[in-house]
Image (cartoon, rainbow, N blue to C red):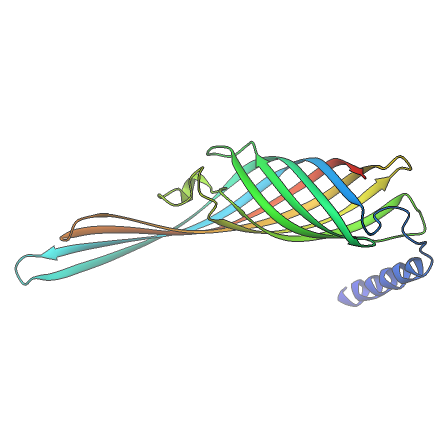
Length: 224
């Protein structure tokens, strides 16, 4: 079975290279172009949270501290609806730097935002109107799931980090308008710590979370 998969993969790669040899010069997404995009993403986010609770008690009899720890893990799922706005600048043909703003309207908490910096590369094909593309980026966010809310991220703090990747296709028209369809994956990571008590009794809660978010995006761009 594995051998069949390898042969199929080799065939697809060879077929892709044969198409690349036939590509035409970029008729869109040229050096110096700007691309303003607005998209809507629908998908789901799957999170895993690891919480460590440390309790420290003062022993009055021998003036020592007693420490106890408790670890817990939990998982959850959020449905996502992202509104995305970005503007890209093509510093070489096909390759753009693309700052992005995401607004997440559906979470178990409050509305969250993400700010990202992406690199997007469009592949020219024999069809001058069709452009497959890949995108990678990094950003910051205040998106955090309910189970990880222990005094860390709030609606005013962008202390969640995220990695952004995407595969998609753009359909360009002669007028400069572009329709894009995209499969998007984001990975969010967040660590937070919260303590309360006094010099005799103290409780510390440390939380680490990882969130896998997968969505389908449909958007519209304008080249200028």
